[in-house]
Amino acid sequence: MAHELLHVLFMRQGYPGIEFREKSVPIGIPELANLIDDAVIHPVLWRDLRRRGFDDSAYWNTELLKLNTAGGAELPLAAHTGTLCDAIAFADIVASSGLAPDPLFTSAEPHSPVTVSLAKQFCSIITHDNGTTPESRAAGMESLITKVDDVLIAAGFQYFRLRTWVSVSR
Ligand SMILES: [Zn+2]
Image (cartoon, rainbow, N blue to C red):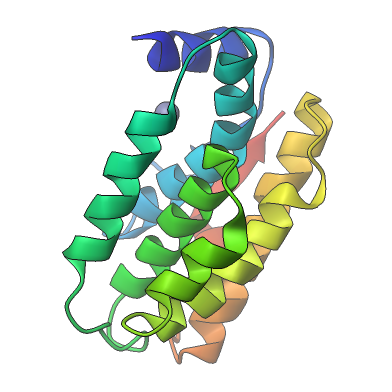
């Protein structure tokens, strides 16, 4: 639908994307890379859709409901990347929806404190520069990759780094 068409349109306009350095990469890397790619481009894309008169409020209600009912206990960061993925996806939703961030974070905080604390940091990177140039988007992707690797290092991942496997195309 309209959303997917805009993805294609943005790509044609020379928007950056994340590329893999090798044909085969470890499990978990493509998922993180795609989430970062989306988290950077989605806020621009949704803003564009709203500007064209597309009413996305029902969509965000559904997404937020999914997020809040997915629930269950947060899994420890050190064991796998699930919580990290959730945090990037959450930041994407917060930044893309155009809704006030604080109530969204506050309502998720009791059951997912780590996810929320990471999502806040990712969100500030995504929304730091709301410019729509390919250069600023590429810079956003670079910052997010660096931030995710910092989180991985802090969580005790020894050899699992995004930088080893991905780069930003310009
Ligand atoms: Zn999309």
